[in-house]
Length: 314
Length: 181
Image 1 (cartoon, chains in turn brown, purple):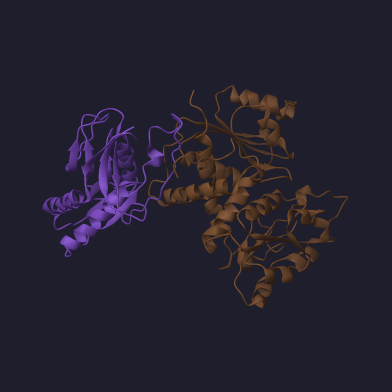
Image 2 (cartoon, rainbow over the protein chains, first blue to last red; image 1 turned 30 degrees about the vertical axis):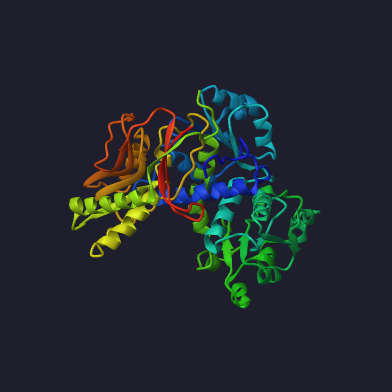
């Protein structure tokens, strides 16, 4: 593998990655996953690197996962959340970040509510940026860990059928997943109420289905998305009630039992138990939800390691 | 690569590997709590040959093997243009109390071995770690590291490279070369 490197300086979205970039990330994630099984779950590679985690939007899982990944690579970590910062005093994004960089930070992980915030930032600052979710646009590390988890279970992504169920319109996970899975040769279908599937989505080459049972019958893997109540305008309702959504699009054991085949169940979290997925299914044998969380750390270590390698030593 | 000199042809290489096997038996028999660990990437080929030959010569001993990747412990991360890419690590046991024999093909500056030692220590506290190398490049060490089992020691000039080639689909026969860039 000598001589290979990521084709991009940043990870702004899956859009910027090639299939061989994704393969390189997977191969390294395999090795980091092994590191995480060791008695000492830490390697010293990034001990001279400082990473700032800038979370302008709430997060538990992603933030923890990034922080663990960084610490297990021996990087120094500074955390920032918008709620307790000068952003409230009216500072601009570029000013905030430049102030942090003035303190000699080598890499930035950012989550922001505005789509394109990371791209904008990458045009104004010089250090590598990892997008940890920008509004409804992309969430590349989630897509990578989802694809990595499928690859781990099924061996390969090529030719596999994956259905993404739920609120596609408001989901950055959906967009990144579609792109990542297609680049690795999987077939993708989206399933949800017509109000939650963007117009012209079929231009991305995905199948669209409104009947969950038909979608489940087609797929090898079902990725159940969370209903993002916080992104929905209270004046515009996308479905009549949670109960109705749950009846139509909630994944229950009964639905799985009817299929007569095993499929893999995924969920990027946090779960609304009893809405998009029943507790029985979420905790059942087909569910790899906790594997996804575990793989998240290894995949993020791989991304950070590969990007850090491109930083020139001063 | 302009000039090449054959340091070992296939016949000699086989003899040397057999001798190293006898030496292992001399030093470690009856192989209680002993493990052979190959250093990724190229030490692993030597490990495989050693392990096969040892089984052939001494079928009564079953010596466990493992591989370790020094990449994440190297001291040249982000120095120079070289990309450091990882390889698998597989160590089948907890190394507490084990006598480890670290196997690599060519010993040069000793820096890779240092990284490998650190990687091994993540798996427990071995009783001891010894170093076995096929080729020992003399007078080039940058760290206080010395092998106790050596296939062949060689003198060399700066700019020369030692290449160990194993018989495979691409190569018709095994040999060890000293090459001038």
